[in-house]
Length: 130
Image (cartoon, rainbow, N blue to C red; front, side, top):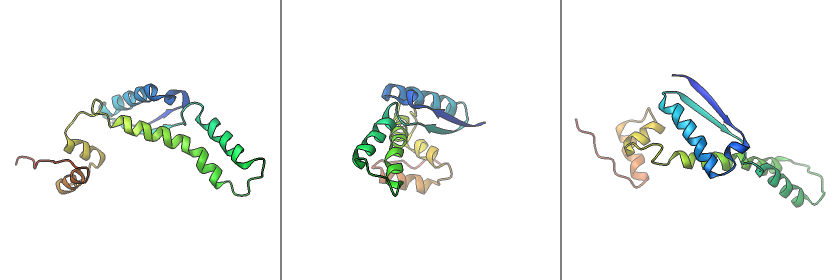
């Protein structure tokens, strides 16, 4: 098993079809037994739009505290990462039992923790046969 960092630029996550394609690449590496960390850029054109909106909001004023600007501009990556996380939950990608899906996210979880997580999600997990 290898540890991989997979980086996808803005054009790779430009729309949902491309994000689904990224998800397939990630899943293929996971299925091969690799431990994967995924890094995504903002969707193509998103950062430029966010910068434009910040500039319009400033109306030619000087920024004294750039934290809000940084937060707004960083949302582009957050959107792409969130959409990828949603797509990766597609049952076509991870078509296993509820128990296995929960355990995948928390490999150290015990049976009781898995049952509690399933209950919080409104799902029932039967007790495994002894």
